Length: 183
Image (cartoon, rainbow, N blue to C red; front, top):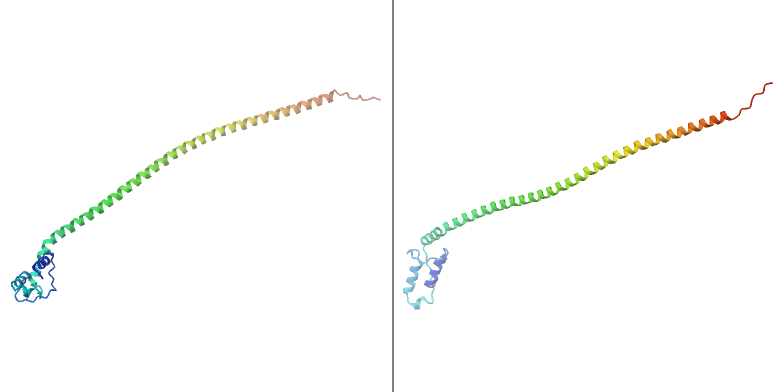
């Protein structure tokens, strides 16, 4: 493994704990072991690849450094996301309230149209009632008039009957009666 590969692995944080360290006693870092490998001859280094030796303390320190570097940003990002989520919930609630207000306004418009229709129908009912009262008055007047006419006809008929009876009685009285013979 070349020096560039080790540097890339360090930059990416790819130093694996599972890599078997060969020289644990010395506490060498990967760069130290690579520099030692570089001091060997080029002939020896090419055919045999030496594994990277990493000290566990170095791994822990690198991990702590990496975490201490990125964790505050991650926590801030997490808090920002929580705030955004809360703001979204508030916005959704506000939007729901506005939608409800619009629906109420539409229902108020519907109520207004219903009230105007009710006023129109009420005025029609009032007119019908007036017409019915007027018709009732006319019918009662007509009934009184017909009753008077009936009474007048009955009187006239009675008077005619009485006149005829008087005439018949008069004719009877005018008819000569035979005289009674005296013997």
